[in-house]
Length: 160
Image 1 (cartoon, rainbow, N blue to C red):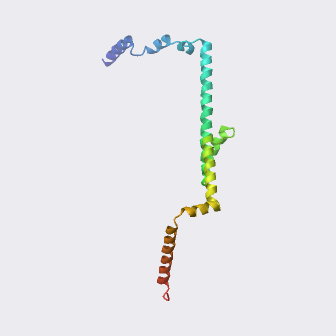
Image 2 (cartoon, rainbow, N blue to C red; image 1 turned 90 degrees about the vertical axis):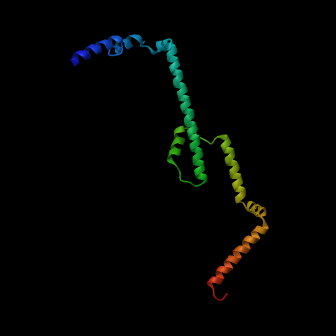
Image 3 (spheres, helix red, strand yellow; image 1 turned 120 degrees about the vertical axis):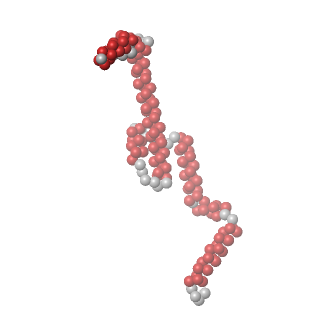
């Protein structure tokens, strides 16, 4: 009885187009040529595909260049702050091929930082730093340090 019901229902479903006969209708309705499906001639379609591939290659090259520039910046910062090197950044720079430099605006910033650091490290920079300090504050710090040392010495030594 179940077999009879199943076969009757499956035949009716096939007739409605909801079941097994869908594969045949798909083959008949869809064109096999993708150019015809896009509404173009075969030559136009091939040109379109070439254009898409070229644009993708340009985007990939620009992306690789940006990644290499970022890696170069990270390498520069690691050198500046004496951090360990990363092989991943070096590999990205090598994959970019040509000599990768920092972008111009970052180069200007780096140059300004180097000039400021050189000024701070020089003797004149240290003298200017002393001039900017308040002399009263320096005296207070020196006196506080002296009194602390004196008290520590008195505690340790019985003669004083």
